[in-house]
Image (cartoon, rainbow, N blue to C red; front, side, top):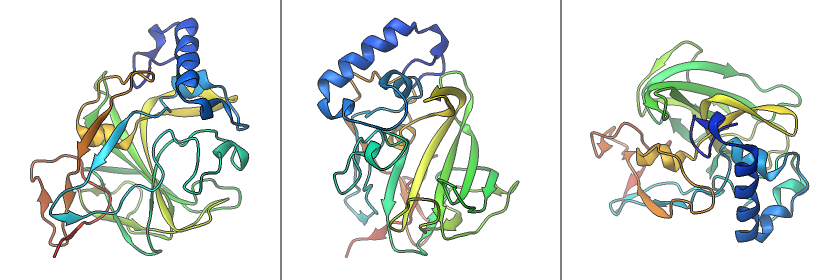
Amino acid sequence: MPLPHSSKAGKASAAAIASLAVALAWMSPSASQTSGVGSEEEYIAAGIFETGLIAEMPEGANCPAIVSGFGDRKNRSGTLRGEYSRWSAHAGVDFGLPEGTPIVAIADGQVTTRDIDKPGSDTGNNVIITHSAITDGNNNGVSSGYAHLSRFNVNAGERVKRGQVIGFVGKTGTRVTYPHLHLNIFGRQKSQIGGKSFRYRYDFLQVLSGDMTPIDPVKKRNQKVRLAYMDRFGKVHPPEAKVIWPFVCEGKL
């Protein structure tokens, strides 16, 4: 069972994970007010909890904001996720944008999955890109997943560059009520939530920060993460950034 946001999870005892869950529930009363599947311990073991990271928007550009954060127990309207979804906590980050808005790859990588929407699909049209240059604590590459796309702009097996358009915002998938990108960050290890195999998750803001050291689910990492992004001319700010925002940012007038 993984340590919080660490791939060396097998060294953690069940008692230690349980104590973390109790402390987290005490700090966040709403955390226990769920009806979705899985226990608090299982979500923590899968890396899914509020990290305390906040996006610091650039002064010179307008970037689409996150409308639903990582580990959130409520959706953007304030409804508890467990009341309408089988999952009690948000395993990614959401960006609400008009249908058809281009989505760009957050980093160089290779498309390993290109799933077409089908009945019962949670993710709808979905692309997963593996990034060998972004690693966890054991030097394992992580992957980024882009869900609910209206259409694709890449094929399985294709190598992509940071900032390349990989698809477009949509609302495909079950229970999706508005056009948005749901962005997942996957680790290699797997755990169980409610008896279902679940790939380990990271907060996108942690990947953007460049610091992949473990985050304590109780103490959190209460800090701002400065955005790296690409402008409409294809220039990356700062140019050395390996990971960028998944949308082009417009310059401020």
